[in-house]
Length: 170
Image (tube, rainbow, N blue to C red; front, side, top):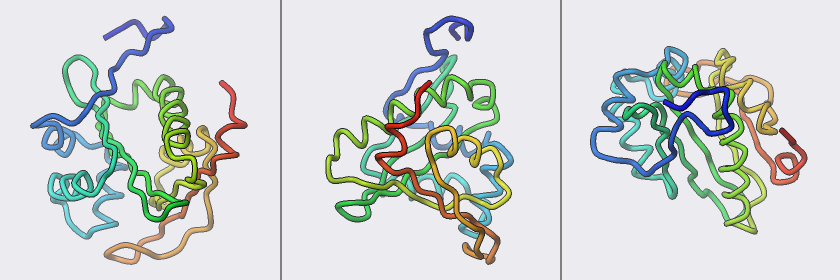
């Protein structure tokens, strides 16, 4: 892994490879596992990541030291809106500052490649503070909690609007 004190990022963003989803599912951060369980009512994280990946237009894996650390992607829902999602391993936590910077670049690129796209959105578990901090760091807006998912747990809608992200500076 590259030294985090340098300007080079300590990870690679690449396409999905065989074995990535199995590894990520087996090493999920507790907050991501809880969010998937609350959303789908199952602990078969590999199956849920596989289904999500199959419906994703653009999918990426964050890798460091030869191991997949996270999977994320964008799913168009209308011409003007898209869903975005992310699931990461416990090792991803060490890279959060670098990943915030890279996330902004990826989200900006997604907006640039889709000129008509105005908003990216999804729901995050109401208690997933790690996701909330990340969303706020990339210009996301979090809304009030509401019951959702398989067991009616509390989730928060979030949006990332084109204009809000353009206003964020490092």
